[in-house]
Length: 367
Ligand SMILES: *Cc1c(COP(=O)(O)O)cnc(C)c1O
Figure 1 (cartoon, rainbow, N blue to C red):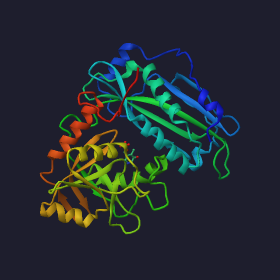
Figure 2: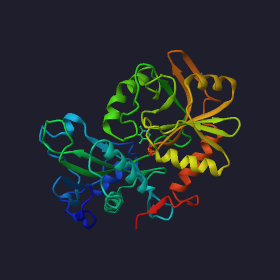
Figure 3: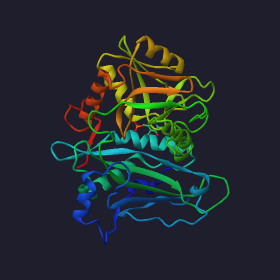
Figure 4: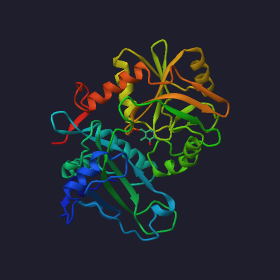
């Protein structure tokens, strides 16, 4: 759906009448947590059927005025991405594999019947925002500037069909360390009543609707005293898929690692993909194959399973220490982060932050 106009997109810079004053910004940046503090600016690009992508601009972050009939409010035609900008040891800024986010964004767009955004425009929008809001990196160690590109159907129309107008935006949120250093192992709840994605559905697309459907099972996990929910497959309620927003890896005692295969019901995580590459370089065997909840329990009991970890952009790598379901509970290894979990985490974080050599060209400098 790219039009000739797309390649000529340049960003119009709108003046900001009242950026956050420096002292208030510094205070907000001291311990921003996750997802509550936002930078001064945002990128907006419009699309309509006749013109394609147009009016790319970067300006003050401000509320959007939406007609009550705006299609996204009714039929959830919305997709998003999540990536982090890092400040490296030498003071420069970098993104981690942004071209993968751009590519996945378009995969999601195709599944949700939305127009694709040229990959270079997606990346340019992220770079524009990071450069403009370069003073919004948190001061604390482990901090980053989390970028949230997203697109939604902006046409006011109640009929059910793909919209004829969309908005693409990027906003930025300074983020602290998701877990403080020495990340604790999380405890997870196996949902038996709910599933996240079915074959033929939208499980492989990063769309808001998937998250809406995961909130009740996630709340159930919290209610029962756990941190996260893990979903099983929709057909047999047997095969482990992923958490609400993180992919899973199982480390065996013979040097193999199992991770559920991408079959359309699992989100193809960029962290997942990066860890597969790094683990193979460590001489480990990665098997992308189905792994059942019963096998997980048995392997944890026999000691064949040494570690389990979850991964995603926000928390990077997180050990799973305890698993609970209607059938009872089990502990993995010592219940804390295992050796390989820690090693892979350190390697990936090191590459992202420029302290470990980037042999794959994953780190893209902002300047
Ligand atoms: C975003 C996401 C992930 C992790 O993907 P990354 O690219 O590693 O951040 C995993 N599962 C779901 C459902 C997600 O939405």
